[in-house]
Amino acid sequence: MFGKVAADVLGLSDVGAVIKPADYNKVDADDYIMHEDNEKIYFLIKSKADEYCFTNIGLVHVDGANAVSKKRMLRRFNYVTNRVSNVYLETAGTVDLDVEIKFTLGSETYSIDVHKKHLEELKDLYKALLKIAEMQRENEMYLGYAQQSLEMSANSIKNITKTQIDLSAEFEKVNAYAFDWLKKSSDEYRVKDFGSVYEKYINN
Image (cartoon, rainbow, N blue to C red; front, side, top):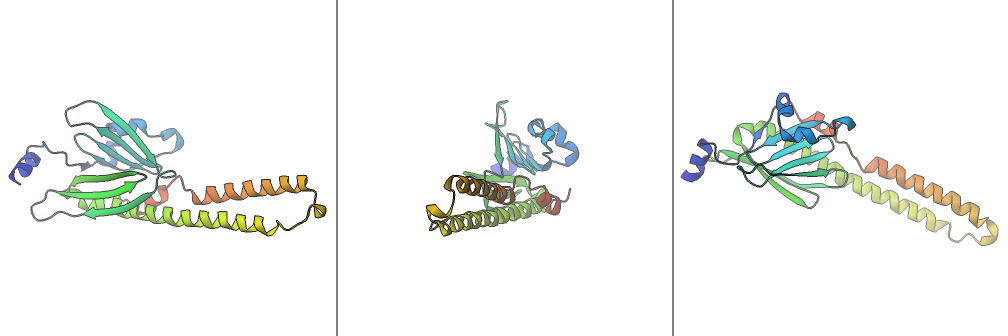
């Protein structure tokens, strides 16, 4: 335990700090934000080796191999293709100097140590990620309902005989309707931008 405390005091540990909005332009992650497409940073954690940049579109992780290497691996996980799940916040004990936020994004699991002085700010991020996870789960369910509804409608017209319709013309109509239905459902339930969630929960 003494070694860990000494490392924190000397600034040798990899405990993260929450960066204020005024300093977003000073971090590496800002260079990779799609500002041209209205992507916006809402929360940013920086440690000696890594940056975890939460935007309305997804997570941009500037992944450092270690604290002394200058090499960085840029990893991006957009919410539209990566579900948020298993969101946890672990607060500090009596002698702990850090708190921890944990979550899964797509197939990646993150556990980020942050200095305990940032606990109140981290609570806001926790709530935002929890809400995004809930919305994604519900939207996935609704999209499934929409697809089932279309399949049920398609099955209900199978008994129409060939003499009753012009098959070629009807197929074209049904195909166009099905495409429009699925696209509309996808646009509604596969959310790309969660800016409204961050605006509600993040207090900068």
